[in-house]
Length: 277
Image (cartoon, helix red, strand yellow):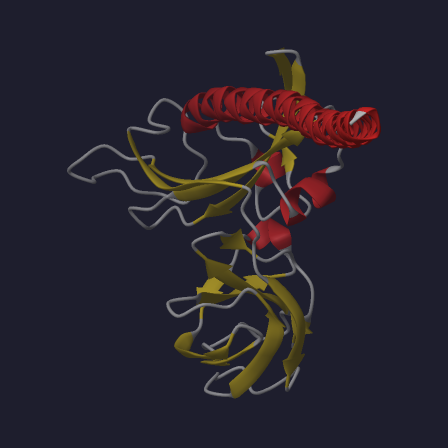
């Protein structure tokens, strides 16, 4: 009888030890899983904080770019800035010479650059494109990839149009204004080549333009390389084959003049590059 009791106690003791071992293993697994969950939550919280800071920084930059561009628009509306005429890379919008037009807002240093297309005999007297970026970037770099790009049309004559001339406006600058586009993180089209590169001055030649960012509705212009003449001639029959190829018919040209070929889409106008003679 004593032997039977001793055997029963031994079984219970072994079972207790097994249960204790199982409990320890379960507790260890639980601690490991809990630790992994805590680490994951900590990483998520850290990533959220980093993302929040990046979002606030991006939002701050966009807000500053928006404000500086609005200031540039107000200045360009009432002031004729010859340095910006057909400028590529663009030029400062309210400061003279090469000194950038810039302000510090929301802890961000933002510069804004302008280029103007001028047609004094049209109701769209001036079409000005504004490029806003952090001031550490060059004008050409900003033009290629701006934080904010805006296109604004000004009419420099009162209505009804009486004293229309090809002189720079003074007291009548900007009597009417319309915002054509206001785009953050715009990617303007580019023009890498044209073929053929020459043709008769009577126009009519169909050219093929290659580049990037072409979309249906794109327009093509021939901008005189003699920038003092401010000659901008629109091409006709623009046909977009793909985002990298389009065709256009050359307009009548001036004798002895060469022209930059540009493409304009809702995200902007390509910088001056290939020349057509």
